[in-house]
Image (tube, rainbow, N blue to C red; front, side, top):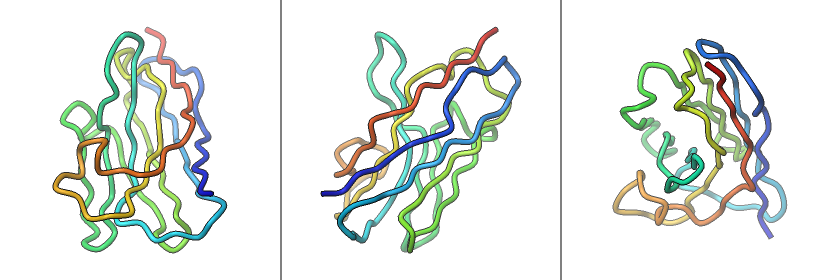
Length: 125
């Protein structure tokens, strides 16, 4: 059994920063990518960003590019997202995800096999 556990969510004012962490536990696994998605109330889950371990490439959604920074440690199956200049529209539950197989796209949820329970991020105006 693999578990991904997120931490670091909370309430912050617009313009503030938060850093989310995600750590894997349970059965050892090797992932192709680890990243973040988010889901705001009444909306579908959307891609935030991911790191592809083999190339080291990091991909971001246009909505967060320049404000969010993803980093991680492949050997430890950990991934982080530093979120700066937060906006009220960033309010959502943020999910960590890991993909253990090759995928056609790293931006779709179908490219991920393990998911965390989510951590709430609320940005007040």
